[in-house]
Length: 418
Image 1 (cartoon, one colour):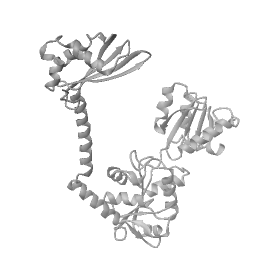
Image 2 (tube, helix red, strand yellow):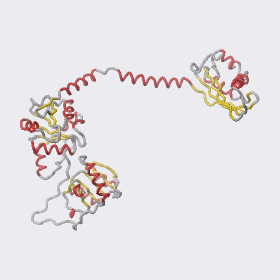
Image 3 (cartoon, one colour):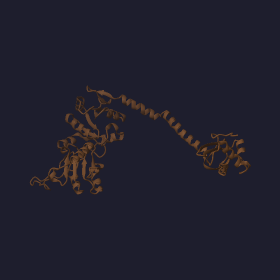
């Protein structure tokens, strides 16, 4: 008897039993065999099915508490679905076990193959992942890995300042000046072997000497630090062209396409020098994609010489800011440095959103008067003031201003005032 186990069965019958009295496990098993005998035909007699191995060992677990017995019944089966269901239903006709009333309820019939199939699928996924982790790379991956290692080996130390540089800096007629070693590595990775790094914020003498002999392109990060390096470099060295990585990105992380785009759209250094000499500390955007220094608003028309312009509005008293407003505005400006972004702030000094400067007008208009202040990384000029006046914005906060407080109906605040 009991020739099959739960391991080799196809289905398992799970049932619960409640008995109004105290009985033992053999009493329950005897009642199952005795009260189902002859009930569903000779072909489905439990004793015969156990002898032939089509029904496994009947497991009964009982627990007696407060004069009542409760437990579970588990019956493994290798019969088909219909026959297994008939066997399970026959258990529920048992109403007495020994002298006590009893109630058996079948909870479920478990298909063992489903759980086995789930195990097979999960195990197969794990084995496939392990195989993919240790499988040999294809020829292209091997070639890329070798090429990358060779490019890293090609980084040299140039000049008495021992600056990281590509192998073509000495013999080439053109060089690309970048900020650090990682920038040189990225350019080498994409085939540019004439890059040399400044390795800091001060310009080494080696760079100054190279700029006298070769055609130089300054290629810096798209942030405030990059702009400062450009200004310092053009002060002490002879730079021919200037370009930048996309806004907010560094040269070491941009792709080959972005590098080519930036170098194709480089701008003559003379153009940038003229802007700086003209008092614009933030030169205008070099192009709309990669080589950007900054974006400025169109300049307002100059007043006629023969008739001095008078203030459009009555003189305004100095802006009175609370300590909380000063602290919040200053923190926002510091967080925005180099991002060319803007924060839109409500009356409770909560940030409604951060947007690029080019999207300020659209964002302020969509909020329909809910903006208390506009804090942005830029110089306050006429267009942004006019936008604030139309939208009833109370404060415009920027790094610097070209608009006098008496010429605006909004409160103009600069970083220096904070």
